[in-house]
Amino acid sequence: MPESNASSRDIIQRRFGQVWPVHVEGFTRLLILLRRQFDGDLDMMLIMAIIGEATLPKNVVPEDFSYGALQQGKGQMVSKQDINTQSIAAYSGIPRENVRRKLERLADKGWITRNDKGGWTVTRKGSKQLQPATEATLDYLAAIGDVIGDAGATVKT
Image (cartoon, rainbow, N blue to C red; front, side):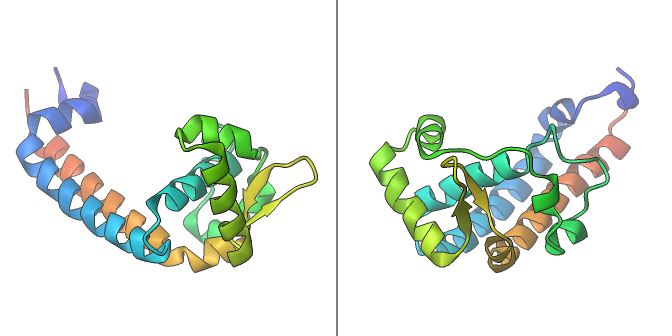
């Protein structure tokens, strides 16, 4: 298979010994930072991530939407969806009452807001205060991308 036709998954499988350590190190560091930002509550982090997924869904975000645009608060202009408490509970597998309490804590922090239809979205304040986690995510993704890119450049079939 020519390298230009190799999928990222193919490259990862072939170069697993190089990719896995970079993934584990980056993912561990990211989880530690996220745990700190969410006061040790990774379920609350998961709920915030689900709201973020609904706020900026992959099928709606323009290809040219940049991290700089997000930092400038332009994510709200792109958002086409929100998600309600029951949908978060169903999607995450976290009991609805636990989701409700964690949403209340996130709203008290000013990281999310609820609209008149009961849907939750990430606020500019939430995006700004979680910027260290977003930047750590970018570092993690870049490290994985570098290993996959290096593998793609060096693996010949």
